[in-house]
Length: 275
Image 1: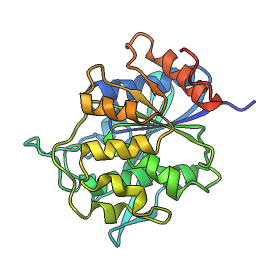
Image 2: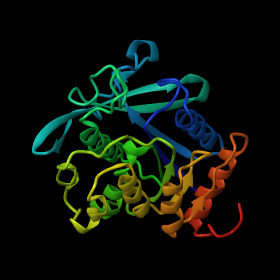
Image 3: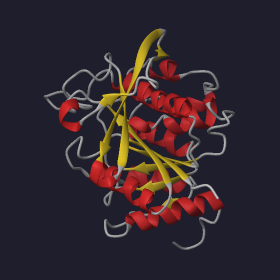
Image 4: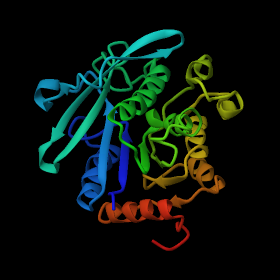
């Protein structure tokens, strides 16, 4: 019997970025799930502030070389990889000189969110899925962490729904207190549309802000996880009104076990059974 395959897509992972609630979960969860006998792949953006020499990143030539078209412009996709030796785990990095060459993550030195985060979100989401296609690796579960992954569920459910690698994949979206300030620009809806996505599919983001992106992600996911202990009331309302299976916040002592059981229940359709 083949191992269950879990694709982890995260906004941030330690030790490549400082420790936060999300980066720690995104570091420890894949290792814990792998140790339970499941097969994993893990992706994050290659922010310029990540030191390639210190972290021993290197380009994967066989995966690089694609171009993604956003707003009628070609953007080369570069894939890099590094290993967390203590975890026996690889992390793939999505890179591009147009989007990830500033010495920061999603904010500038003043703490303001970058104006191209809208296109970075599109590029990262599509870049991960195109790379997984090149790997010819078919995930049973796709687990997304952070708003920069919020378009992955939409693309999987609409643009990649007939792709044999993804047609059976179940999507889980973890919701954190990672809100960004202000909406994306008014052209965001046009930019994110590719084949398979209609205006109706994205009508929820008339105002492309954090809440509407979260709703878009939840609507197109099969289940959700509360990743932050103190989630704001609007996000909780979104989750509970979605009528999707929702795993409550889990303590750091046992979240790996609880997430693993949640994966199994989503795959078997027994999520109403107690965890």
